[in-house]
Length: 484
Image (cartoon, rainbow, N blue to C red; front, top):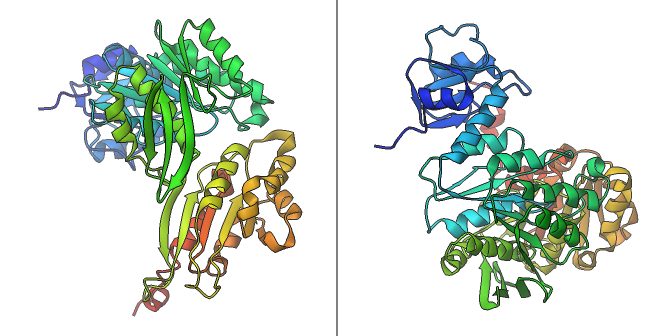
């Protein structure tokens, strides 16, 4: 029988709260829509006050609820944990969960690739013990303590993603996670609006090292202009420091990255040991992150050979560079186009990497209305770039990969800056909002094309992805008719 994640007595001791009833819970949830039977429902205040959902959560099978007051409609003898502050209590649960496990903990941050790195490390360690990591990109002030609070005592490895929007966010979360090792994926122009410069971003990301345990491992990208900032912060934290990248002075070196069919491969040296690195996506820009992940897995005592096998199975999560075939006519199997769905996030660095992946793709010819298959980019606004945002968008026109892109559709007021400097032959549509382009999905692609969709989540270009996926599944006429 599986031991409970938390008993009433343990949760009360961890939070300083008062338990009503002698309950146990098997999980922790902040959303009734995703709650499992037996979870502890945490009534956080966010867009809505979670206390408004406590009665429904208990009725749906929650094992208990973490609250700061007894909500209306909830009996006083209901299974509750009453605390002064729900957010603070969740953080307390996270700290205690971290302290009671012997797991080796890795914390991950960076301007680009945090979630991909988290999933890579999960894959690399999956055959070597019990791995705990967030199911999605839970990397903020509630996501990190929630991930920790959900960690079973028996965990062997934990992977904690830590993000930020404003200065001062990373260090408290890192101190809560107390990682044995910390990985910074890269420094790039994301959150410039809040941090002002790449150096400011590096300063903030480097505060992750403040949470390291004694003699913890700091894994840093070694080829950046900001690398000295990261190294200095790691030294100040008393960390063991290793670096990864293409430069020959790095601890771990990536060599000759290239596309091989539906995969990306490279030669590499892991602390001088030669090896072949492979991931199950044609995105070569993921390979450097994969090397950093492999190095940190080895650095916390995992078997690098098994980690390599796990990494070979990794492909990007939905919306972060996944590639799929779209069947454009349900009656003709050969009428397909390829979709690269990278619609979850964007900044100039990740946008350039995605364009490079598109440029390396091979369209199919002579299967559609247009004889020559095309490389098409559908690009949404990049957000939080600060006063230089128009220049950053326009600069995409000069990216070397653009020479191999046939057509560019632009979504959003910021992407107008790119649209205006593209040559006429490369200009597709420009629209103010994603729904406008989604409505034209049937005009955007043809069989044989490869289409990239990328933009910040707030640009909503995922709506265009959804519309493209529906092209081969026309709505039945009966769905548009009234009831008989």
